[in-house]
Image 1 (cartoon, helix red, strand yellow):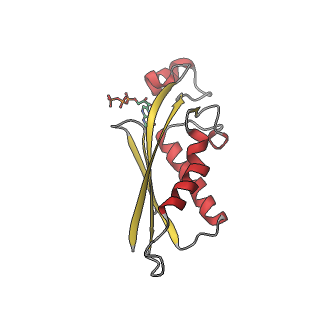
Image 2 (cartoon, rainbow, N blue to C red):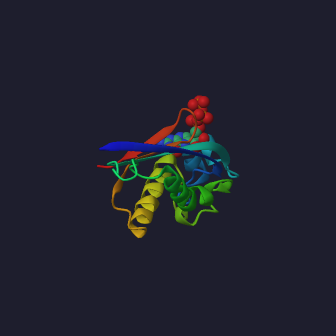
Image 3 (cartoon, protein in one colour):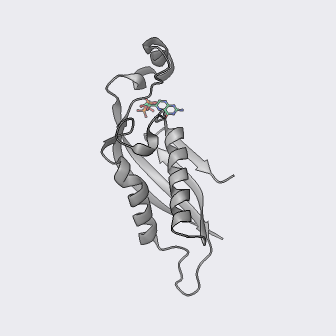
Length: 140
Ligand SMILES: Nc1nc2c(c(=O)[nH]1)N=C([C@H](O)[C@H](O)COP(=O)(O)OP(=O)(O)OP(=O)(O)O)CN2
């Protein structure tokens, strides 16, 4: 079994607030991240898959294909976008890095199933919101 990884980067803005909270409570919980016009990040994404080498190609999964899948399913939707308003699959959610990672995982799982790609599995998804704030989801 091997792990294969690819990195992506994109820019997006977001605002952390819960519409059910008062402005004061949002400020208390989310601090500067609740500012009404939002703020931006240079995000990084790591997609990690596991599988075995196909002896006929020498590859577990073509990295070009992985790039296309992630670009089509995730990056094209979020790059230079406001996560609260522009991304259909984040609507109604608070776009914390945790929620973002969960949603990316769900979309990629759906895409692999739709494409009937069953020789690999997602192993982990990591998002760097900043150089220092990082969330990883791993397969249970
Ligand atoms: N559990 C979470 N906590 C926070 C999230 C999150 O997604 N999940 N997000 C934020 C903010 O978006 C915020 O912009 C992060 O700012 P900050 O912690 O100041 O990060 P920086 O890297 O810019 O600051 P350093 O002090 O340089 O680390 C807050 N919390």
